[in-house]
Image 1 (spheres, helix red, strand yellow):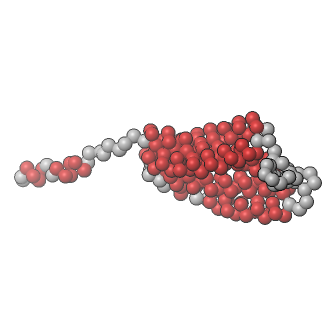
Image 2 (cartoon, rainbow, N blue to C red):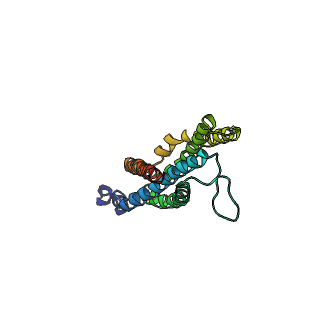
Image 3 (cartoon, rainbow, N blue to C red):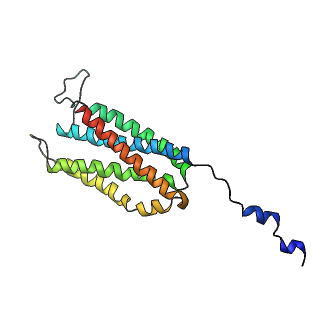
Length: 196
């Protein structure tokens, strides 16, 4: 028996050495910030939409025409911070998720059902309980059902989205995602409460 038969060759030995993967701490932080921004954006939009629906579903201010219905206080702040921060946050979260773990970016697809189910709920809630002096609410029923149909089926993908995350980092990614979502929602509730 020769010595080459006893010792594995160098390439086999090197392949058994664990590879140093970069630490995902920066990715987790960037993902946290982005997901919190998205959650704030959806929450602010939800509250802003409810403020507008309280006055019949439309409003306007300024310009050369006299509006029959002015916008409620705070609706502009909620809408004009919620929409841009949510969109920018999605891109920030994508960068963070890519640096966090393989498959983590797929969790961001949950923004779709979060947006459509929550806004669909608003339409249906106001179709059932319309503001005073409101005529037909058929349009709100149609929008609520359509938004629900657009959002609810995506919820069935949650097990596959979670399973697709790199196993050794799955728990950390889920903790970051859930904690950021909670922080973003609480920030949206806080801002909405302060402008009413």
